[in-house]
Length: 487
Image (cartoon, rainbow, N blue to C red; front, side, top):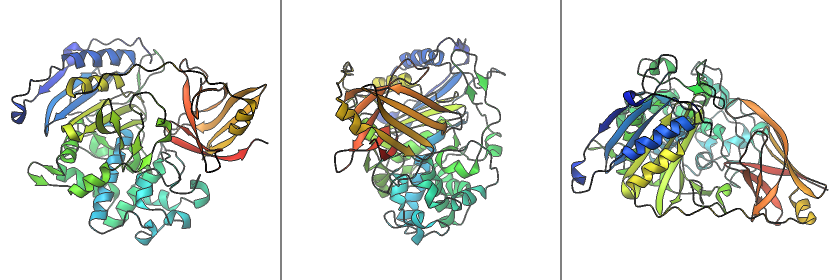
């Protein structure tokens, strides 16, 4: 990660530490070590500021703001400050749609077209379960601009055409898809007869006491609000202007919230849907959201880490991490990065927001877990062993793999395997990729390559079909289907 951005932020730190009566006999955790890790990681990642909340036993026991919320005004981050949290929005959308299924307004395993009109033919046959578990076979993309009218969600989803949105058959493989959640939000809107933002507010935010959480920029700007920042390398971070907004994409990644509000969601989630003595969510809704439904192929054969043998439920990644069962989701959107981890068995959660594009602060997150949970010792990552490939083996891998605008070719040249990639734009709307790089084999169906300008290798897996030949190429969270084999 980039280094070099120095901040004198010690005077700006804010701390609220709440003792929990039910845990009175337990030694209070000293989070000073966490503070040091956060400050160091802000410098290492060139991130102006962050906010953290930690929940244990049904109470927020620690909240703190670090650094600055705006590089121009130098105003400090406070725990009540709103951030954009990107794809963490998906767990909120999933919660409301699953709640509507509990009320009998939709069946999660039935075609959505049986309940809501406006879909093209194949899209109408999808189920809510497939949409929420990223197994619908739908491509991935996200807009950054510029539909501002709240009719845009319906207009956008009704314009989706079967020929443009499927890269494979539903139910075949996990592949992260923002449009799947746009559709889910549209379904919420149609089932409730209210704009998506109003339905989310009335059915989730207000009942949980998430009083400052909103999708509407004109509401968010009336509360303390962190600006989002971009930073290239060690260059000074700059404010992202304009503040991006696309109403049609709200259900997948556009919510504004603060760590205190999201902590209330985590408390209710770990307490069977109850908060402040009120039953807000059904326990069966929590159980449905918490169930792991589909494997994340990229997590196969990965050393211990946040994507070790991951599966996906409805709005959550689910896995074991150093002996602890946890649910989590990250989010990134122009100017911001965020991560939330929920550990139901220990009634523990940690929430970290940051105000630079893509900043997840993984070291700080891991430190919070280490200070708070009985984690097993961290295993040393084994050194990658390069595995030789025969020419026949490389020929078997070679072909073209496609997911919407993403096109990846594996080709053989002079006895070596290469990855050629063409992606016109990133899902955040930034500059695309167009490069070719040599490929090495580092595990069973697992491969590595180094993109231009990067020092660390990236990895991908090939997922075999019934014949044993590769059918999909899976990179991190997205799958691309093989459409052409090399002759």
